[in-house]
Image (cartoon, rainbow, N blue to C red; front, side, top):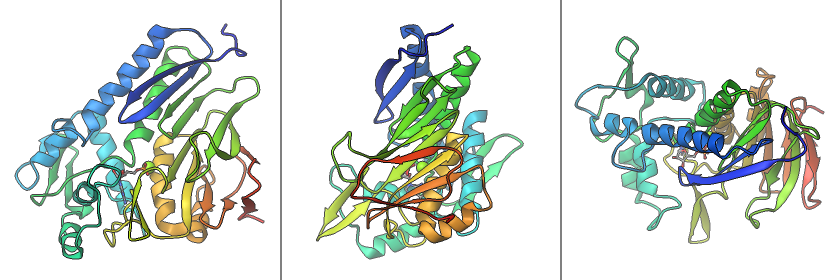
Length: 321
Ligand code: AMP
Ligand code: MG
C-alpha cells in the first residue's frame, strides 16, 4: 500500500518541455523508466531533428511510401482522421507552414504573403496517403511535411498512464509541458492549475479538481512573437496559413484520454467559444474551458471536474445556463 498523503515529484526536460511526474511512492527507478518511455516516443515522432520515423516520411515526400512502426502509424492515422473532421482546424500536414513561421524559435518573423500562399498548397491532408496493409505513409508532393506537434504529447501522456497502470500504480500524475494526465484519485483529489495567460510562471486563474482525467491546455501565450504591435502565436489556421485569430487566449480540454484533449484544443481554437460549445454538445465525454481575451472563463459544462475561480479579474460564465 502506498501512502497517499506524501507526494514525490520527479522532473526532466524532454520534447523541449519541462516534464513532471508525481507519485505516492519514492521510486527513482520507476520514474527513470517513465522518462525513458517518453524519450523513446519523442525519438520516433519528433520533427525538430534530422532523424525520426516521422522525418523519414517527410524526407521521402513525393518519392516513396515509408513503412513505420505500428504506434507511429496508428498516431498518424488518428491525426489524419482529426484533420478530416468537418470544419477542422487540425491539419497533420501543416509542417511546411510551421517550419517557415518558426514561431517561438530564433529568427521568427511574418513570412511574405506569396510564400504563405505557396506553402498552403503543400499542406493538403488528403495528400497524406496511408496504407493499412503495410502500415506505410506516403506524402504525395515533394516538400510536404507531417507535424504531430499538436497531438504527440497527448498520445505520450496516455502511454505513460497505461505504463503506470501496468506497473500497478494506482495514483499518479504526468505533466508533459501543459498536457496533464492523471491516474486515480488521491485523498483531496488532483488539483490542476489553470494558467493565467501572459503572466508569471505560477499564476493561475483557477483550479480544476479531477479524477482519472486528462487536462490539456493550449494557449496563445505559450509560443509567440510580436511584430508591428500584432501578436503571432503557434496555432496556425490551415485555411489561411496565419495564426488563428479569434477571441481566445487559451482552451483547456478535460477528457479521459489526453490524445482527445490534445486534438480538441486545436479543434476548439478553430471554432471559438460559441461553435465550440455547440460542437461539444454531441460529446459529453469531452469538456472545454475557454479563456477569452476579455478575461471571461467559459465552461462548456461542468460534470467531469470541479472548477474554482481564484482570480477576480476574470468572470466565470457557464455556456449551459
Ligand atoms: P498544441 O501545443 O497542442 O496546441 O500544438 C501546437 C503545435 O502543433 C504547434 O507548435 C505546431 O507544431 C502544430 N500546429 C500548429 N498549428 C496546427 C494545426 N492547425 N493543426 C495541427 N498542428 C498544428
Ligand atoms: Mg494539441
